[in-house]
Image (cartoon, rainbow over all chains, first blue to last red):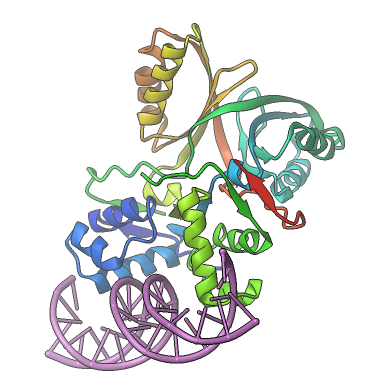
Length: 169
Length: 169
DNA sequence: TTTGAAACTTAGTGATG
DNA sequence: CATCACTAAGTTTCAAA
């Protein structure tokens, strides 16, 4: 596991680099350098520094689920009965462990968890609900929202390059 | 824009390659080749083919929102008044255009849209709700779920390598 | 058709000023 | 931080299965 120093300061160069990388990691460092007015080695040093700091968590390929036979995206709100720490942790582990679960957030509000699920069929989803929800005595209820259109999908973070720099701990 | 042929067949080699790339795009083709028992050029040809087919949509860096000053992730359910095609399209365009909106799905069920929003503060979120929801006469109501824990975040698709191959149109 | 081996080209990396 | 030199990876070519 990568160590994460408690704090890191990002200047506008770093934010400019991030803005490019979160759209296309294959961009040559030389081209990035031209865009942010820096040499390629300088760009590389900043990228490595941000990787070590945990700002850049990974470089991944984005796959179209429909083209690999996983054509259904479902949104699930889950409400639990008991919110004791250990029961919550158990639920988190169960949800996160399922490969069909793309994303899982523990939230405030009328629900306790929100999941984004990708499955090949409704039958597969039904099977998943049995495994994750009906089999879990701590799940009070869940609501299903089937996606008819993936209007916008991604993990891109808004990088307001306007603000000079950001120091975060 | 990349053209997308109507159909493509993926064999177990392709699925093996995808399984690696959606976790780490920086893996050298030579290493991928060793993992799936193929030479580096063969791996490269298959990657390019999948890119052209749209199976691989992009290669992106995953950024920790908290470390770039965007520390709040919010989940929003939106219900609209009228579901005519043009009003829906307008809503889709508005939501997708906002950089704070990381993901947007048009869904069935009690809500019409589900959004994943990333903002630096609740004030910024309030401002966003004014812009996207209160200003839009077609938005009936919306419900907010603030994420207290990002249990699992990613776009990784379940690739059941077990199934020999998949043909999708 | 698709593969693997080798040559080639380009990008990533480290040293120096 | 930029320039240069070096290494390693990505890419093309081509012959064979």
